[in-house]
Length: 179
Image (cartoon, rainbow, N blue to C red; front, side, top):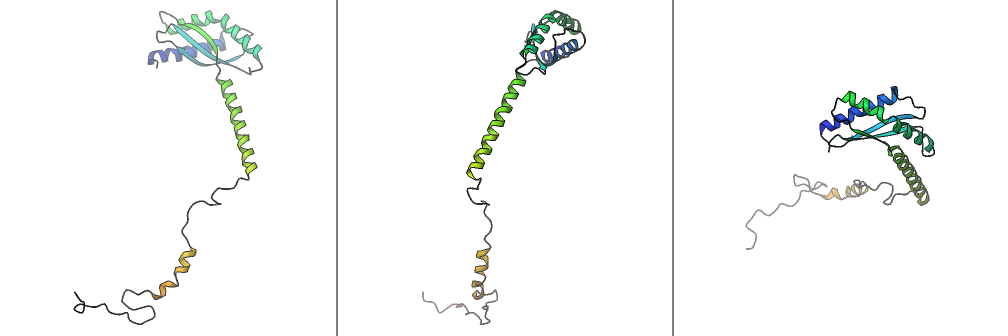
């Protein structure tokens, strides 16, 4: 983890370098550069500037090489401007590194697309039927409720009379039992 002061210095260096590349560096080898991140060491002696080149895909190594050479030649000018704007006693040494994030993201997208295609092929090959039937969730049984309705006719009501109108037998109130 870096301290808040180091993080502020890194953020400010990122802005200064981006403005310098946009306005003051006029090297024809410089492509469309985007400064993606700046990492500064804890003692603020070294700063690593990560950049990407727009339009420089994996097959366009000449544009990347030209941009790297242009940044190396403009390193002194950029460092002096960073020192002026930061007002620090010791200006960090700048190191420019091509950011591998776009290449990594492109590779991950390709892997995900391949996995998606393989999943679709497997689903098409097996017919895509459910293991537990169409609806595997339990539902209340409606057919059994209708079958039980016929058996309820002979059950006693609350008042002691059977469903057919004949009074039910009275329970024995006491005394006749053998102990």
